[in-house]
Image (cartoon, rainbow, N blue to C red):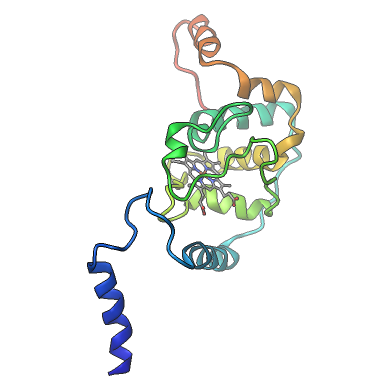
Length: 179
Ligand code: HEC
């Protein structure tokens, strides 16, 4: 009988209309703790160590371009305020380029795992289907390099969309290749 009380209680709570569904709802006690415990346990079991080639300016620039296209809307750009998309999410996506942002110090295998598989119930997408393994590696190397990015790479992140468009036009209107 006692055993049934717990699932019945959880069910009633879910039916009560008080459980947090909106991203704007306040967190419930232990929500972060439980979510992160499950995430770390899964990643630790599934991650495979990966070897990243020593990044060159060119590979970091390619990573920066992919980051701008696919990640910046949520994870931000240097010297820019978080976008309304990022502000409206729960949990908030970490802003990788804010001053004092936590440096990504997880092993590359873990960052790569998150990029490939996404993080359920957070809005962090899985990129496995849309980025090649090489592209995901390039972004991982770029993120791991964090604050020590060389100037030409930072320039890619800081280029305004207008400048990018001009560059694209001069290539006879062809769409930029990802990569
Ligand atoms: C729609 C929004 C969104 C987009 C686009 C997005 N992310 Fe995320 N990402 C998130 C959120 C939200 C989290 C935080 C998840 C959490 O709290 O566990 C996250 C977490 C991460 C983390 C883990 C950070 C940490 O501190 O452990 C990495 C790494 C990451 N994202 C990389 C990327 C990369 C690379 C891209 C682009 C290819 C990307 N994300 C695109 C929303 C997004």
